Length: 189
Image 1 (cartoon, rainbow, N blue to C red):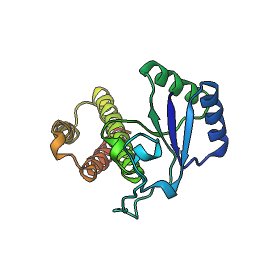
Image 2 (image 1 turned 45 degrees about the vertical axis):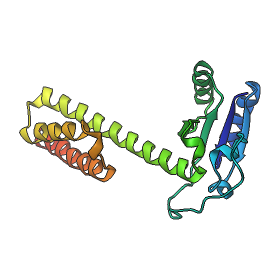
Image 3 (image 1 turned 120 degrees about the horizontal axis):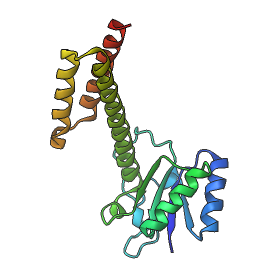
C-alpha cells in the first residue's frame, strides 16, 4: 500500500484537502512532527529492521519549520498522478522526496535538512538560469556586453564542475549577474 509520511502540516485547510485526496486514493498518511526529528525514517514508516532508537541532533539551529512529504510504495504513474491532483486542488507541498535505500536510514532531521538545502539550491539555479536568459535577451536587443558575457562564461564553467559547488558561491554569482543585468538595462533606458 502506498503511504506518505507528512511532516509538520502548516496550512491546515490545505492539509485537509491533501488528506481527503489521499483517502480517496487509498493512500495512508503517517503524520509526524518536530518530536520525531531524531527518529530514523525506517522506524517512522514501520519498516522491518528499524528500531525506536533516537540519534542525537547535530544541527539544532537549522530552521525546519516547513511542511514536507515523503512518498513510500508508489509506482511512478501513481505518484505523478497524485502530484498532479494535489497541485490542481491547491494541496501541493513544496518540500518532498521519495524513499530510497539510503534515506530510509537517515533521521527525519537529516532528511529535512538535505531536502531543504536541495530545494534552495534548485531555486537558486533556476533564478540564475532566468537571469542568463534575460541577459541573452538584452544581448539580442542592445548588443553584447563584454562584462556580462564574461561573467556568464565564468558561471557556466563553475556549474560544469559539480565537485566545487557551494551555495554561497552560487549566491554571489547570482547577485553579481543581477547587478550587471540591471546595469545594462539602466544604461539602455
